[in-house]
Length: 151
Image (cartoon, rainbow, N blue to C red; front, side, top):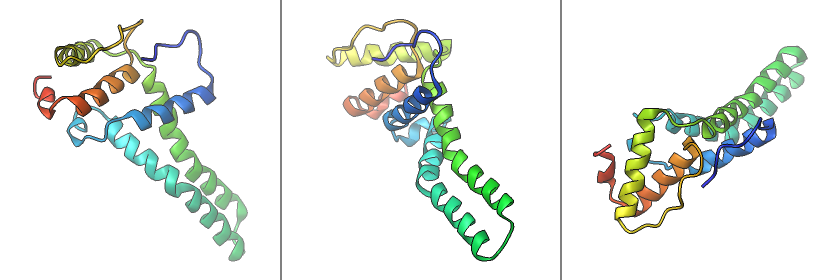
């Protein structure tokens, strides 16, 4: 399991952590009411896929029609920044320590995995959202969906 980084994290590492967090997030609709990550991950994936094309289309359209280049460049930069904002938020969220309410849920899910015979590495440092995601993903894979009802 990953631990909370010591010191400050570079902006590039935050984007990498955001991508890792986005990939690790379980795509379970039952988590949507509890966590905003479900919506942020979907919006970020959409933005990564389509916003570069929107930016190129905007620039091409304005150049072809002889329009003003300034607003077109601003729109293209804005379109490209949307998925980056999502990755930044996810990266920051992944290294955020869990609040007390989620900390108890984290330990309960870990306990259920231990009771199911799964060996888990001991928690090092303060549990983060990245650790929670890894535990939830493993729980969805190995346990039945009823474990969420108890939380």
